[in-house]
Amino acid sequence: MSATDLTLYELAGANPNLRFSPHCWKVLMALAHKGLAAERVPLRFADKDKIAFSGQSLVPVLVDRKETVSDSWRIALHLEDRFPALPSLFGDRGAIPVARFVNSWADTVLLPAVARVILIDVYNCFDADDRSYFRSSREKRFGMPLEAVVADQPGRLIDLRKALLPVRQVLTKQAFIGGEAPTYADYCVFGMFMWARGCSTIEVLEVDDPIAVWRERLLDAFGGMARSAPSVQCPGA
Amino acid sequence: MSATDLTLYELAGANPNLRFSPHCWKVLMALAHKGLAAERVPLRFADKDKIAFSGQSLVPVLVDRKETVSDSWRIALHLEDRFPALPSLFGDRGAIPVARFVNSWADTVLLPAVARVILIDVYNCFDADDRSYFRSSREKRFGMPLEAVVADQPGRLIDLRKALLPVRQVLTKQAFIGGEAPTYADYCVFGMFMWARGCSTIEVLEVDDPIAVWRERLLDAFGGMARSAPSVQCPGA
Image (cartoon, rainbow over all chains, first blue to last red; front, side, top):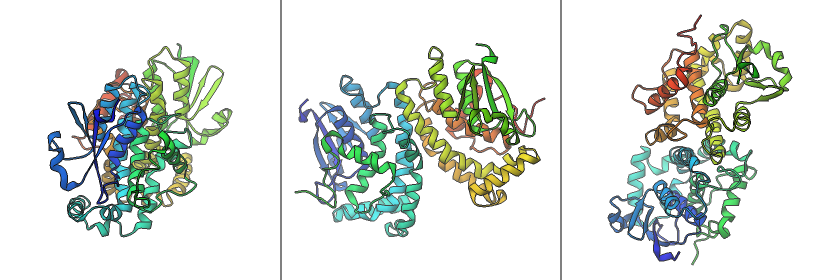
């Protein structure tokens, strides 16, 4: 399948190489899992009008020939249905509903817990226009200034590591959340780590955390696709 | 299959009809799902020596002919493997690893959140000997007196309802965590509600919570097995 059949609109930082959206990373891993290439289009918050055709204003947006799909979960289901002969994102169809729980947990528990550690770093990745939008939207969401959200960073890091307990417990029993091989359930959680890696120099995991071993495996997956992605530490050309 | 082939050792209160252990409820629902009957043996903490044959001291313990299985998760896997022709507990084999995540989340997040609301009610269900064991073991676990754990019950109830967000989000999209029909992933969460129902008169959910609708469905499942179970409100004969 040629790259031009699929187009993925992704959030980017002031440096357009920096693609750190956790939801976009779920989709990037899903595409790699299926062995699919996509044309990747960087988007700033200020460029929202460029995805107005999708009928909403959030990335990721996938355009598959004439079909437009937004929302990372719906994109994953779309890829699974459209490319049934390629490696399944879920292992079995019966695993899809439970993977949705993992996705919901990642979005409602893990994402805010990571945000409380790295929110200022995320902010600093944007250009002036996007910083202004990000500050006002996120300060509304958290009900306080960005600086106050991350004020007690060491304490928030402890909270984050505590919030990861169910993942940690599972990964002491099996190599991946999806079992012996990674599935979309893994990518839902991994996306949050790629967000932190993309924006921040803070190491969110302790070195002996079983989750760190799992994260290494996923950084290495698909020819090291995630590991070689530009980040604030290695912004690339 | 006759009831005498399977024996389930369950935690019981001072009233031996009261079987409220969340982990035992996972197994009771799993047995009902498979259409299996078991001889149910009530056990107080003080009776631990009666399950010494299992090589450990925790219920549930399932004895299946000459085989002894402890730990609710391992019992579920045992039932699935032993009775492959009966309705699957997981839908597909590929859903098992992800169901383990739901189980870990239920045990490490939901259980303590429910405990912070009902711990005194649980305590009150035991006889004098078991109260003494329960108080010392749980006060050690929580690092404070039982009374302090539940001191701000309205606040802890808000925390619990907040902790349930990923379940709530999933249940606005699908009837069960397992999809269109309940699977063991549902029972892992439902067990916590049966714990609260068994021990306490506190309603842990708001009336318009989608989780309350799901809970009703599971109370009605298998001929209303869970609904008709004795509780502090209806302790039975």
